[in-house]
Image 1 (cartoon, rainbow, N blue to C red):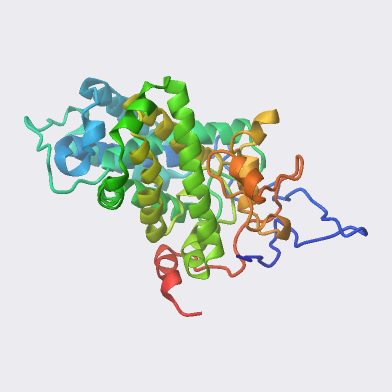
Image 2: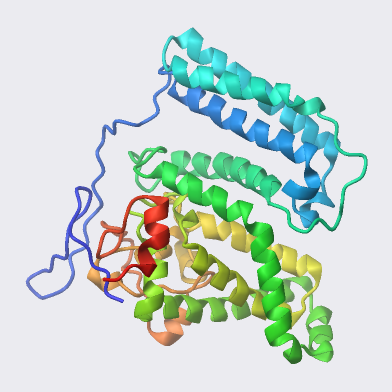
Length: 396
């Protein structure tokens, strides 16, 4: 699907040398971005206080209403005492960051909001909030609020650290254009995790239940854990490769996938932008190989953890040299080319976990050490959540 876009302020359109070969140029980013965080301005402490305050409120609500706001699978593995300590220190740090903005004398509004959110969390019970004596294990429907809190907290700490210590584009800011839109997508996707799991499980059991072989699954489970993980990786990637490619090559499906490609600044939040239709299709079909293989829970957990990390990592603004590993596993450089709007890279690098199937089916693109200069889509999509939600249903 050709989704070439017009040149932007940070990139160039297609340019060719005298021999017709493509000229790869480095992406230019404003060396003095207006939204950059600088020590002493109060911006870092202000936003940190607001984030911790919001997460504290959500965490307290999870303690109060676990049957409706937490996922049963995660709930069974929680150490409540440890989580209370994490909440306690998160709230204390939130207050500390909030008051720091007043000490610095800047960004006092952000600090005020952060402190107010922490106080609301305390009013709701804080880290001493009493949990229900008995939790309804089979609530009709629950939201993954716990998954949202944990995923955001861990992802933000890990990937903001990586993007600042090992950046590909050192001057790219954390609060880049449209960051709030992708935070909203991040929240929606994680809140719907329980619904996605229910739909996915129902789909594979109903449509592919006939194909389950107990003998084959027993053989898979007899393999060493690492071998089971590798089998899961290859089989899942084969399905995801063709699913991804279909979304690109079908004019109808591309409009849904275009929402994901509408991101024009790549970082750890960029992968969160997905239309809900694609999210449901991806979840349902991605579970098919996992369901049919029937690997041990330990192997399945290892694969899910790896896939979750990689899904964020390949979108991140991280330029860690990977050497020969970039030919074995999907890396930020590999996936950034998939998001590029430059003609040599359009409709390439479909694989999710490894470039293996791109090698085989002729869709691999990795021009040495070069990185893209432009990201996005041909036709600039609406820049709001509701506009992007309705985009695929609008007539051309």
